[in-house]
Length: 472
Ligand code: PLP
Image 1 (cartoon, rainbow, N blue to C red):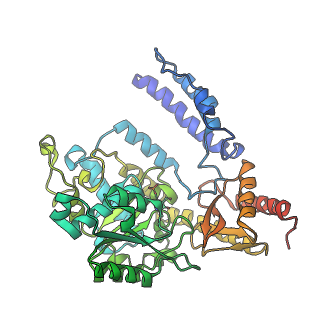
Image 2 (cartoon, rainbow, N blue to C red):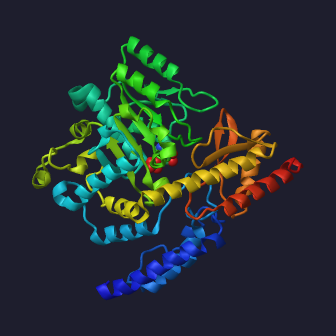
Image 3 (cartoon, helix red, strand yellow):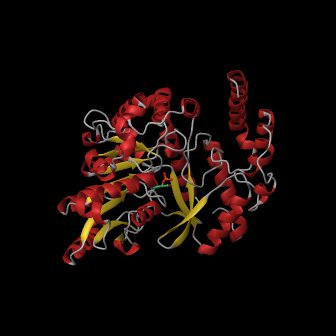
């Protein structure tokens, strides 16, 4: 593709994306397709000769789009939003054009230094504790952040023993029963077994980890001669956006030299709003903290900022020297070689889209966006509370509302199925205290109060049909 052709096709692509965003409301939020239907329409082999770019875009429209779930759709209320924005998409396009790889400072000095600077900016915007200054790195996902944190924790606790002999059966890790599945995965991937992960029960109303039970578990393990390595607390659990009591958890961790990783994947960025900054309480004792700006902060997938109080713990755990990296290995006191802060060797220039997004919106614009999500959830929760056939089953401080019909789980499951079959909205479900519960997640950029009102009218109408009652 010549530069001239690229220019022409590139303009067509930008037009395509703008049209797509505009036309989204007219599409079904999830596709009415069955497994294999998309693949069956695709040729079995790659073409022998090159094809025209116009044909590619046409096939995107006719073969691919009908099989897409539209995460940017205003009725996409099922999972935590995965927000993107014009500046983020354009920055991603620039990143793709530059296509420079920043595994070391020397392989991309500007990307490394921009990453350091924007991570400090974000820490400042979120009013994070000073201990995280200069300790930031952008991971691909919160799951990677979890595994990296656990690796650093194992290194800090067991040092050479761990590095030479790996994870033994004596190490234990703690988290709540409500923690994201990525904790479980990270435990397995770090060489620990399922039985070495202690799932601490939560308080039934708040769904937050019970620190009294955490303390008991840690002390029991110590008495049994085991070695508690790490605890993972969550600000905004996936199921209900519960917030674990960080100060109490941190207190236990400090008493026993247990690494505290805090997972704020979805909700952590809410601290950009001063009125939600209370969620940071206790973070001043965390060893590592991660959030996803690709969820609620408009940067598009994937972008997972993570901070370490002591980056040396992670670099010492992860550094592997190789002769072929000799020329690109620097002095970590001068500049980071980010390959030692993450799992892959290579890394894209993710800082660019964070930089563009923070600058385009400014702190004010970001706050307005976050507040819109919180406000839509409040409107929705009020509507639910106003109908006594329904209940809101967990606190909803952010953009998620967990609710259910006061009826059997099977009726709630049927309600969800009927709602999602309509194609205009998508909700999801979880279990709260063992009961089937629906989740409504606001915060997508296209969702307005009208869409929330529409979702609620659909929910009420389906409830009428299912229960044979009207709104009382
Ligand atoms: N932690 C929490 C609280 C989440 O809600 C999620 C995803 O929804 C994750 C971790 C995993 O995020 P990722 O897909 O970035 O690995």
